[in-house]
Image 1 (cartoon, rainbow, N blue to C red):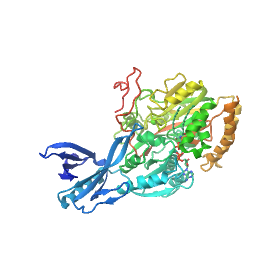
Image 2 (cartoon, helix red, strand yellow):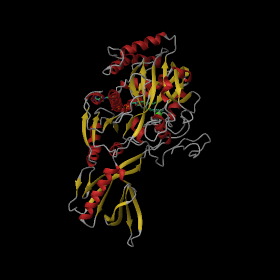
Image 3 (tube, rainbow, N blue to C red):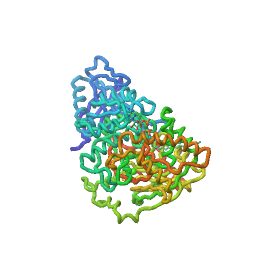
Image 4 (cartoon, protein in one colour):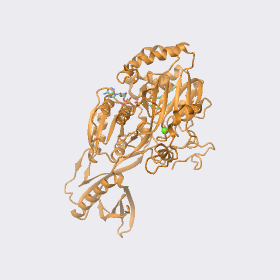
Length: 581
Ligand SMILES: CCCCCCCCCCCCC/C=C/[C@@H](O)[C@H](COP(=O)(O)O)NC(=O)CCCCCCCCCCCCCCC
Ligand SMILES: Nc1ncnc2c1ncn2[C@@H]1O[C@H](COP(=O)(O)OP(=O)(O)O)[C@@H](O)[C@H]1O
Ligand SMILES: [Ca+2]
């Protein structure tokens, strides 16, 4: 069937202007006509971006209202884009056009045809959602943001939602793991990266339980999750939202959820001694980012500012840590963290990875079927080892852009290519490290520094140098603190972090002063895993390609999207910089 066949076409009025409107399978277009019936400008909205159609002259925000005497009128709501002043992504807003028909009969035809088109062309739209609000996230605005900005849009789109305002940490995760989710098409969080992480753990854990797979064995291919996750940003860093949508804006995210966008996302599983510790999508960071998080936990009352304050304090404490980093490099033919590309909506690197990661899915070639032999002993020789003192060791599965760092920890990382970027910042003088940090806030290349290395990887191991017995004791003490269950396998899910944070706090105060005023600085840092402190120092991380799906579509290429200068100094070098699409 030709989807661009016109299904309905007629003259319509918008205010005092006359239009010729046409509905095809894919688009709703309306073209302004002048007095001589000549075309003026056309507005074209993809059917997939129509949010709803209502009889009469309707408005929904800030409050729903319907004008009287409206039996020849209907209102179409749709996605309207505008550039966001401060970030590089596009803001989505609710566009609204009120049409007036020559007759009531024609109005009914428009309503019917538009609703049929919406049903047939948006099969992936959610009908029922389970929403978790963290009332304490970010500036504590979660409830208000949901009820004033998001709920009216869900209602307009005919989505019914069951809302849970959380009363404790991990409630959302436990709910997803244990409760009946029949009838829900997706789960949504209103909050920051922490509540998102709860949904991530719930959704992955539940999917593996149902598939009868163990999450502990890092060599197992996990089952990818069908239940989509939506994020309404209302947190402190909002990194996952920012890096997958391009802005942290509740209305934009709500509209992506409504139209059922789907963005696969790589997930890193973090293990210790053959047991799963946590999953991460943005940052697994040791040294600076671990210390900032540990320090910031004591200043939660500052809200989002706690990270800037703690960042400055930790920077001034001028620490570095000894360690051994091992990594399994990804195929350097496919992409590189320094190729000056950006992973944008429809990214070709990620699309090719879909074929590689799911060779048996319809339409995929079987060229790359043996990808998980990588953890067997015969690939041991492929591991690369780096030993030394580090300011920071970070692994990120995506760019990890956020309002603090609009291009992110690794600007060329991909959301769904099955790899992560390992950033190793070796010990350096304070000014060098400040330069590295500061470059995260601009388009200058933070990897173009002699003490920084970046590698695209499939897996990473971190251990303490042999012979550092004191450190190992500290490590062991921490593992015991980490609250393991009796079987000694699964990390205890309740309370372990709180307990650890309290201990870290006790120690942290002393550590911190030592770092500032005397020579005895701590020898071991902690891992920051998407904003949670890990109870282990020695870890193994493995990237699982496209393990979950978000209601998002990646960053849309706004005209302001910056690229770094290529090595020849061109800012928009078509040959070398802009490889996307
Ligand atoms: C000199 C300016 C330096 C700016 C450096 C910016 C680096 C930004 C990197 C952002 C990485 C984000 C990775 C995401 C992590 C989140 O999952 C996670 C949890 O988020 P949630 O609380 O919303 O749940 N967030 C975090 O762990 C926060 C990490 C933030 C680190 C910010 C560091 C600010 C550093 C300021 C240094 C200032 C030095 C001044 C010297 C006088
Ligand atoms: N009702 C609650 N009370 C206390 N902590 C909660 C609650 N709901 C969620 N949390 C936890 O709060 C932490 C921070 O949440 P998050 O939404 O990321 O806000 P922020 O971005 O400000 O850190 C997360 O670890 C999450 O598990
Ligand atoms: Ca990736």
